[in-house]
Length: 317
Length: 209
Image (cartoon, rainbow over all chains, first blue to last red; front, side, top):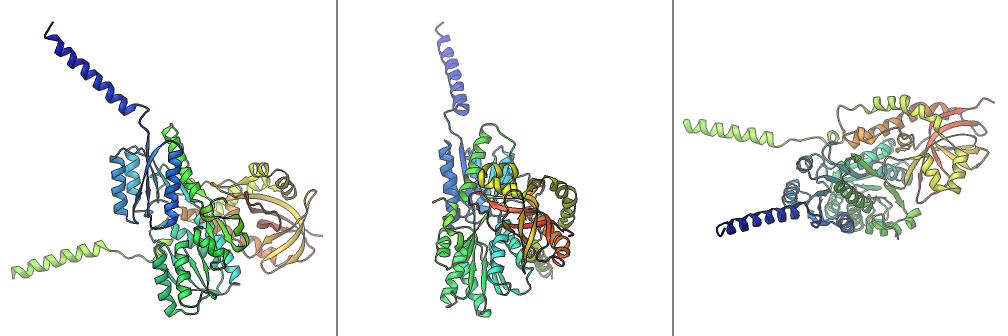
């Protein structure tokens, strides 16, 4: 009998440890976690997107952490691997590259981690669980129409593009050109990328102005670049003559439209996208699997005439 | 001699790797969307098989405007379509009206209706956007793997309007004509404005007097 005691203690210890292990793995007390992987935090628009996603995740009762990909697909891959290794249960994702990011999304979904794209798209309907995207094309169609009316169908203009690997860049450009190219009196004298970056846009326009000093307008693929372009025009003493158009609905551009410095922007709603992505992840955790592959979010034209309806990033006053 | 061969092989390998590591693409090629997708063909089929049959379900314009004033939420719920989230929604409408002016970019008319009789505009110049594609609610964005293809469908639908719907109308229409129309309109549910509504036409007919 005496020799059985240590054996039974060992047996009970193993059983206790097994149950303890099961509880910590499957138990309800361990909250699910969401990783928020964002293309860059060097642009206040994406900072707002990440903050809103984090706030919504918290409101829904989940832990979350923001990862900054710094517009680098390789770094984004590292973030995905880290997120999966660290046991994150869903990824709210703002990709760096429509094609280059597909593999990251596929790896995560293959590992059972759902991915919800926010604002930027990956070129695959099968990869992400759902993609919640701004309807950039339609937003830029509205901007372009205002552009044509404001310039009275004639003049020289410059287009500053975002990142060439991002679908939003081309959706915006194509939406814009689907209108403007119908007017032969409107001549595009330069088209260059400034990677959605304010400083780069300033440099790009400064250099274009050397060769093309008599332009009438600048269309920029986002508001950061619109502000950079405006700075270049101020420095060149042309800010009163050249009309600047942006896209995003960022705070400084909304204020600049009020002041008459920028003509128009397309108001995106990052909060709506971030909240929808977090809600979808929550529904996924609760068992839902049938999500729309793409969910466009309408973009609204903001001009001086309707500025009272809008605040930065589509927030309500 | 052996050394020369070794250097030669080494240089060839380096050249091969360098050539295959970098490639150049024209910006136009990047813009093009999926090469295999024919947006013009899709738009033509959409027009014939989905949009035209949907026109019978268009809302009578005067009644819709009255409902928008009295019960906005019901009007949007019952008659509007949109492919995603947001304030912008599209309606398919029909009606008749009397032309009050023919301008460079639009035709103005007074709506004939038992309900509202506002002045409205038919776009004859700025035929752009997704109103016609999305108003019938018969197109599914998830059929398209690339949103550029989906957007190209809109551009091609608008091209059909620009080429087939507007020219025969614009060449004949004059002040005082009574017209019958079907078309699509875009309204902002949050910031609703019911004056000066612009219609993107789908069909236009001048009534014989």
